[in-house]
Length: 279
Image (cartoon, rainbow, N blue to C red; front, top):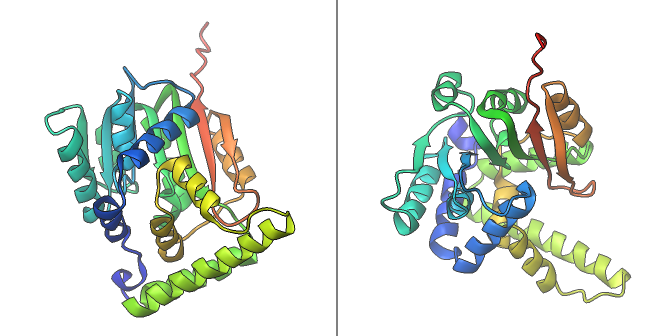
């Protein structure tokens, strides 16, 4: 079976998001998300690398914060989405460049140089070579620069079951895919509603959806499709990621976990300057 039958088309999902769900409010939420997680009021004078830019929303957010931005993605449809956002908001700006590129292509990465801020949200675990991807982004971060990544949480057997479901989803017809997404979404909705009822809270999900929208400016539906379909799919425990980057000379400055559930753990690292041993 070839890759086109098992790999999820992220670009198709992001095209739908850009064309149907992107609003000024979502853009502002994405800007606030970057500002909060990087701990910076603006990105003026900063260079920003968006690895696996997807819809282009966070490249746009970084540009609005004042950064010089380079975006790339393996999926040509994602490149098209990002190019469309540049056309809409920064058409004549030469400080936003966009490529089709692969985080596993060392020659391509070497051609880009280093950046003050390197961002890759929910991407490296979908490459089919997660640990190599995590390694490859290291030289892209300038000394004293920040690396922001998110990686799916390792839930043990549950993660293995999700892997099987994702592979089945990508081998299925479109009607079956829609059915799977609706079933998964319904089960999650029922579970979260029951949890809220047990806590004597309003069981309706609207507050939860609003918070998700506000946190990153994303769409609940498109995030759900991304989660169910996202394959290849790899996972890691927080301590594995922390130890990996600590050994590479990075210091953790922020961590937000998904509380042991399915979803992504988010990390911001700073690359410590090398010590001059001659002094």
